Image (cartoon, rainbow, N blue to C red; front, side, top):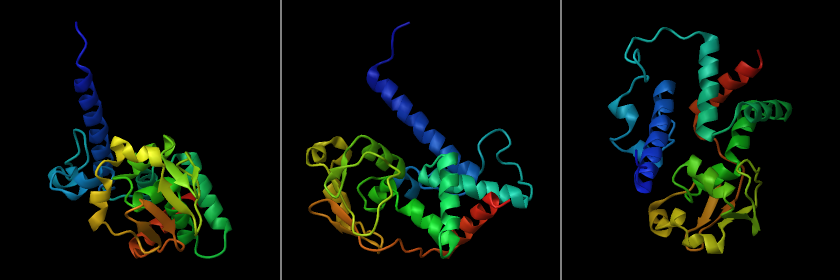
Length: 222
């Protein structure tokens, strides 16, 4: 048997990756926005097939236990931010040791990850892409190459794209796409220089998110 064309293989791999991301949303029962602009279109799997994947996906769900609800919420946040269990647990433990609202502490730690800030600045279409961009050394923090997606940023840090990386296909048409993009209030972006800055601590405007984080903290407090 002959080998498949390289292009075909790449398309097949990309399709499988995207399909798996859709399954994660369907399992969680809500949009996790893992596939950039597709999540905002009518092609979104949560619009076309808004039920869990598998043979019994359409079956009526049983009422979830308190533990099940906590576990599901924990998994949701891990998937959104692309964080593994050990690292996520460390974030929770660190957040509960700090002064202030534990929920806000945890969300701020997740929001201040370099890969998340690159995404929130609009320099990547999705968090998983921003993780790749950072890991491949395309991003500078205060003019120093930083290739650790989990790197914790602080107020005043400047995030930019390496000059030679701007020609990469990863950033093709980025300047055009950013024209209508609005960053969160705690970030600023120079759209001409493709350079962002953290101007304040992350602002948690969605109280529903805080409720979800509270459920996650309860899970680890058992």
